[in-house]
Length: 330
Image (cartoon, rainbow, N blue to C red; front, side, top):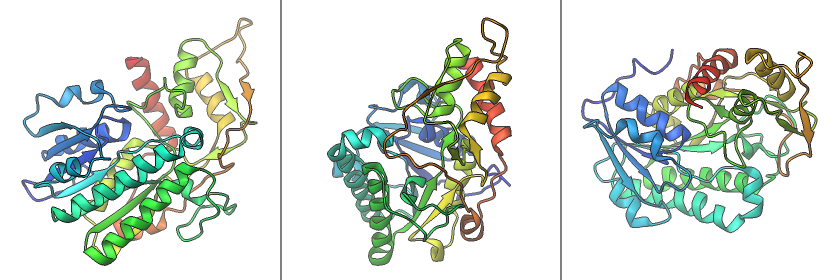
């Protein structure tokens, strides 16, 4: 279970793109803790220096400020690298609807540049972030690879395109690629302040500040919230996967299902928030977000079978850890 007993060759070098972001910085931290070298590539537009500042004195850590939209930057960053963990991308479904060209440049062209750079440098494994958004309007639960619906946003299009390009690089160029379809990842270092912030850090910060969060929609939408430790495990297990498992995408989640209203009330209770009358405050409600899906729940059997994924952080365990981290760091 977990990833802390995974062994790579002694002098392995990992490149983490988007390494100053939420998921990327957690990957950098975990790999350094295992004793391997990490090269972090980030242009620091959404990634934060504070996320990677603790690693700067580690002799196994190297930082490159650069943009994945520039092919030569990607080629240089991949030199001597064994494993690429490609996390660099622009997130947010609503923002992608506002900025489709920008999402194409960053999420599709940027990923293609990284694939080409990895190929030219004979990288062993290329693991990249996909998204549960690729399931679109497919109504069946749980979501299962191979049963995708109509895509609902430019963000979803960009992630589906990444999967198709990665498959081509496995088929034609021998690059072992593994797509990880993340389902609503949360945990330490996730930014609560962005206009497009994920719901859990946003709710926690607002409640800690005695503000009442606004839930988009009726709160009855459900998500397979996935704690960051499970995502770290998936990335490292994919680096150990067999060639036969390459060229495919895998659901990365815990396999549960949480409703937003339940999460809101659970956080209110955990943080002991009361209104002026001493009662549990009710949330505010806003309009549905464009491009959002109503329900999301993952079948993770393929990832278990083919890459050895075995998540041991349940939602309950993860949310308690997240609450404690935000209490100490906000």
